Length: 299
Image (cartoon, rainbow, N blue to C red):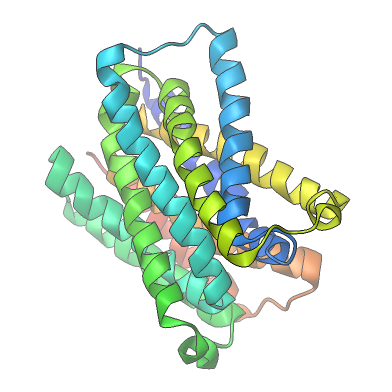
């Protein structure tokens, strides 16, 4: 595979598109919890995403060697843990807490990239990451009432931290699989492997909280939410996330995760008429500068 400078920057930006698709995920998922409990919604999301990815992969004749099944099961475990803790944590916390904790995912990814993959943490990359963190914090501070940070559930905070760490693992340990196969193959079979794991979580949840009514699950709004979560924020976004790893290191890809907060706030302003203040605009600029610095740093 020839990686020209143009191609490097073009496909390195694929995770930015993924993060943009995730921007509305927390709003959509929290809103849908009234109809479908979190672990079951997570299962439906990944099941739909796995189906879409598998159909595309099979049409392209994509397959994997039997000796690599264990790798995909491990990646699937990271996915299942991410979705389960992310959705439970989102239900138990408020929007400001969930948004703030998104900054942990890139940090965990950079640290794991250094420890597991031997990636270099250059001064330029560290500086860009710091700028992106500061920018994200400014965005969150400008969009939410941070006085409500203490009102959340401790278990929810722990769950969101676990989700950040698990997604970092999915990113870093996916690098050798992406390089051995492709972004499509890695995303497809990791998602397929995660589906039965989340099915178990869903069965346990439904046994405890009860099965939601068919009218709620089959409502147009719930079906639309599951379709968005499954097709856009899972199948397409996870493929785009791994596509970036074909061209740049895990630490560089991770910095695009910060765009999630900006896109989420922008969607809130566009769809919910939420105000956007100067802190949001300043934070967006600072974060963008940090992203550019990291993405142009040598790995």
